[in-house]
Image 1 (cartoon, rainbow, N blue to C red):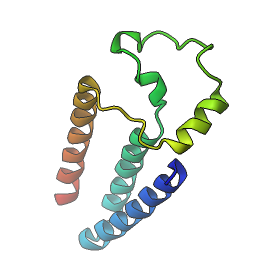
Image 2: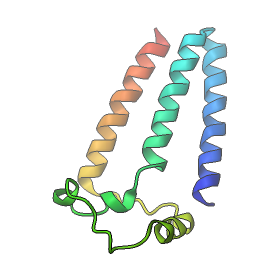
Image 3: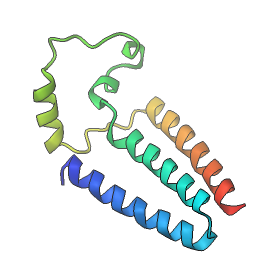
Image 4: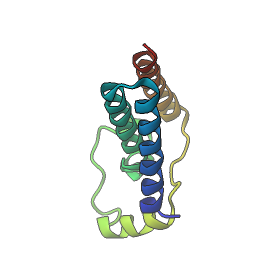
Length: 112
Protein backbone atom coordinates (compact mmCIF):
# COMPACT_ATOMS: atom_id res chain seq x y z
CA UNK A 1 0.00 0.00 0.00
CA UNK A 2 1.58 3.26 -1.14
CA UNK A 3 1.24 6.71 0.34
CA UNK A 4 -1.60 7.58 -2.05
CA UNK A 5 -3.64 4.59 -0.94
CA UNK A 6 -2.94 5.33 2.71
CA UNK A 7 -4.01 8.95 2.23
CA UNK A 8 -7.17 7.85 0.41
CA UNK A 9 -8.13 5.42 3.19
CA UNK A 10 -7.43 8.02 5.87
CA UNK A 11 -9.66 10.57 4.14
CA UNK A 12 -12.50 8.04 3.74
CA UNK A 13 -12.23 7.15 7.44
CA UNK A 14 -12.23 10.86 8.31
CA UNK A 15 -15.36 11.39 6.21
CA UNK A 16 -17.10 8.60 8.15
CA UNK A 17 -16.06 10.14 11.48
CA UNK A 18 -17.28 13.57 10.36
CA UNK A 19 -20.68 12.15 9.33
CA UNK A 20 -21.07 10.27 12.61
CA UNK A 21 -20.03 13.34 14.62
CA UNK A 22 -22.49 15.52 12.70
CA UNK A 23 -25.34 13.07 13.19
CA UNK A 24 -24.69 12.39 16.87
CA UNK A 25 -24.19 16.02 17.87
CA UNK A 26 -26.59 17.51 15.28
CA UNK A 27 -24.11 20.35 14.81
CA UNK A 28 -22.58 21.38 11.52
CA UNK A 29 -20.01 23.45 13.42
CA UNK A 30 -18.78 20.43 15.40
CA UNK A 31 -18.65 18.33 12.23
CA UNK A 32 -16.56 21.06 10.57
CA UNK A 33 -14.24 21.16 13.60
CA UNK A 34 -13.85 17.38 13.37
CA UNK A 35 -13.02 17.68 9.67
CA UNK A 36 -10.44 20.43 10.30
CA UNK A 37 -8.78 18.51 13.14
CA UNK A 38 -8.74 15.32 11.07
CA UNK A 39 -7.18 16.99 8.03
CA UNK A 40 -4.47 18.56 10.17
CA UNK A 41 -3.80 15.24 11.93
CA UNK A 42 -3.56 13.32 8.65
CA UNK A 43 -1.36 15.99 7.09
CA UNK A 44 0.93 16.02 10.12
CA UNK A 45 1.61 12.31 9.79
CA UNK A 46 1.61 11.68 6.03
CA UNK A 47 2.97 14.86 4.46
CA UNK A 48 6.18 15.91 6.29
CA UNK A 49 9.57 15.37 4.71
CA UNK A 50 10.68 12.56 7.01
CA UNK A 51 14.11 12.43 5.37
CA UNK A 52 14.71 15.93 6.69
CA UNK A 53 13.62 14.97 10.22
CA UNK A 54 15.49 11.64 10.21
CA UNK A 55 18.68 13.56 10.86
CA UNK A 56 20.02 14.31 14.32
CA UNK A 57 17.88 16.87 16.19
CA UNK A 58 20.73 19.39 16.26
CA UNK A 59 20.76 19.37 12.44
CA UNK A 60 17.05 20.27 12.02
CA UNK A 61 17.72 24.01 11.85
CA UNK A 62 20.32 23.70 9.08
CA UNK A 63 19.40 23.08 5.44
CA UNK A 64 19.90 19.63 3.98
CA UNK A 65 22.81 19.29 1.60
CA UNK A 66 21.66 19.23 -2.03
CA UNK A 67 24.06 16.44 -2.89
CA UNK A 68 22.13 13.82 -0.93
CA UNK A 69 19.52 12.90 -3.54
CA UNK A 70 17.28 14.49 -6.09
CA UNK A 71 13.66 15.11 -5.20
CA UNK A 72 12.47 12.63 -7.84
CA UNK A 73 14.67 9.84 -6.45
CA UNK A 74 13.51 10.55 -2.91
CA UNK A 75 9.84 10.55 -3.99
CA UNK A 76 10.27 7.28 -5.88
CA UNK A 77 11.86 5.63 -2.85
CA UNK A 78 9.21 6.96 -0.46
CA UNK A 79 6.44 5.52 -2.62
CA UNK A 80 7.65 1.99 -1.83
CA UNK A 81 8.57 2.63 1.79
CA UNK A 82 5.40 4.05 3.36
CA UNK A 83 6.52 3.66 6.97
CA UNK A 84 9.95 5.23 6.71
CA UNK A 85 9.03 7.01 9.93
CA UNK A 86 11.50 6.15 12.68
CA UNK A 87 10.18 6.52 16.25
CA UNK A 88 12.94 8.64 17.79
CA UNK A 89 12.17 9.54 21.44
CA UNK A 90 12.17 13.33 20.96
CA UNK A 91 9.95 13.06 17.89
CA UNK A 92 7.52 10.75 19.70
CA UNK A 93 7.31 13.10 22.68
CA UNK A 94 6.62 16.06 20.39
CA UNK A 95 3.99 14.24 18.32
CA UNK A 96 2.32 12.73 21.38
CA UNK A 97 2.14 16.12 23.10
CA UNK A 98 0.81 17.98 20.05
CA UNK A 99 -1.71 15.34 19.01
CA UNK A 100 -2.76 14.61 22.59
CA UNK A 101 -3.48 18.28 23.25
CA UNK A 102 -5.32 18.62 19.93
CA UNK A 103 -7.40 15.52 20.59
CA UNK A 104 -8.23 16.73 24.11
CA UNK A 105 -9.36 20.15 22.82
CA UNK A 106 -11.38 18.53 20.03
CA UNK A 107 -13.08 16.15 22.48
CA UNK A 108 -13.92 18.96 24.91
CA UNK A 109 -15.46 20.97 22.07
CA UNK A 110 -17.44 18.08 20.59
CA UNK A 111 -18.68 16.74 23.93
CA UNK A 112 -19.85 20.14 25.17
